[in-house]
Image (cartoon, rainbow, N blue to C red; front, side, top):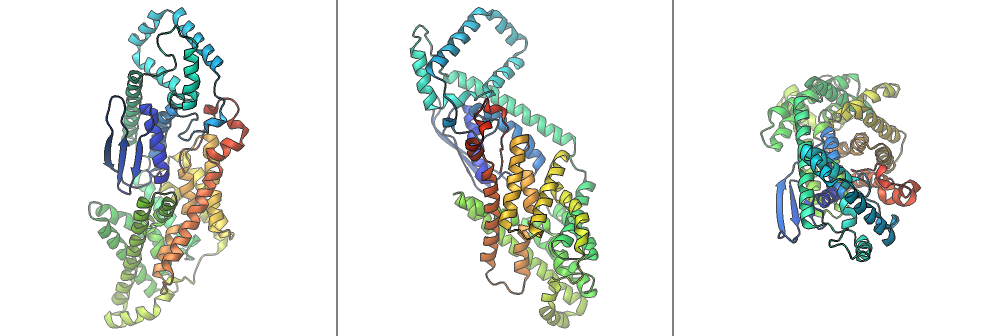
Length: 514
């Protein structure tokens, strides 16, 4: 649903630790598949499994799944998130403290009526299961200490100090872990089932609202980024709806065919209008803005970060995929323009005119005045944020980050600074409000239109240093975004902020996703 690969591996490993009570489970993600390695245990042999995955953005679904993910990860964490603070920053209980905890717990257990516990479990086993999971999730998690060698050393000393007990109080047996894993799995499965039922019964955005989002985002892109006029904005908004219709009709076909047909159609329409009324319409502004949904900018930005984060196989595959499909989009638009010349001017004259007039078709001489930007920007930012399928409550903050990125870029700030400010703001809001950060990040990076750099470079008559330019732009945005996230990560704030070292760190919400 949009989680970056370099974050997802760590997330899933922490979830596996929280469910299974042991470390060592490893995940390896590729663009279309995921491999899972299970280490051997006392009762099972090591194993490897694989399942298919598909990319895409659905912020509302990701937010719902995140709650389940954080819950499972909390059983092996010391924060309310997947990321956990360095254990060295936390005060490890002394042997005397552990002895006092153990004696008090045993005294309370023996002093209470043990039959009452059995009666409660018999009358309401679901409540008992929930209480067990809540206790395991609270404070430092059930397996945070269990998997900590430092704690096990202190706990063993505490158990050795009270040799009267037959069983080690601080040891978690395999049977207990198995029961707990079953309870955690059941709770997670029920949560996911309720989430799917809720999403199937209630439609987040009606088709009409999605069409409005497409129209406003494409029209806003024409006016804000590509220097088009009001006529270009109207045509681009209408074409964006037709592009979505074509993609829906060809949904069962190969992706190559879908994008070729859609882009060729856009190229023909935009080209015919630009040739017939050259002073009113601009081919470059209309064509690029109409296919914003297809652009591969996020894929290339993510791919560069994946390569730098040592996910070389997935990153390289995603990078090549993004570059190749960008070339497909660009050349399909250009073929559509060539067809438009032949349709409007005839085969012979159209071919000759296309070669000489092509460069002029990419630049608009009738752009809207910048005085309209403050009026257009809020609507456009809300619209392109809505295309990522967030909940309605998330739209204002996502639109704010889109406006922030555009204003920084418009004011002349480098791409690195703009991307860093977006991810830092998204991370800080996520850290102190519990909201997920990815939606705000995507809405902000969208305003930097990383995909248009590639399409415009390929559409340009001069394609010198295309790969170097694209990689440099993607790396600049990716590094800026990564650095902004790093500034508000648990690694930095956990060491520099007193609030993460005072009291119960579980009460401090932290960021889950980039």
